[in-house]
Length: 96
Image (cartoon, rainbow, N blue to C red):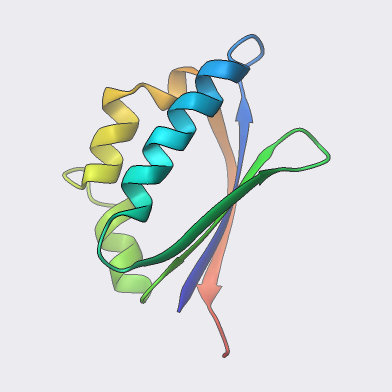
């Protein structure tokens, strides 16, 4: 499995919109073939941490690095990045 842990931060004053849109975009991501799971939580720092697993790295790349994917289209159409910003991601293949 290819595992990704991403950190996001709401733009000050946009917390509610970011949460609402983030959940909508997350539902789209979770529904795509090859997405094994998606969970998120608000960390003690206030950042949103999303943990998502994919069948493999090729599936991840086909979803996240493809401008035509439903996930990327949803981010753009719903203007997620007008309400929050991506901070960082760690990713890799699980050992088990």
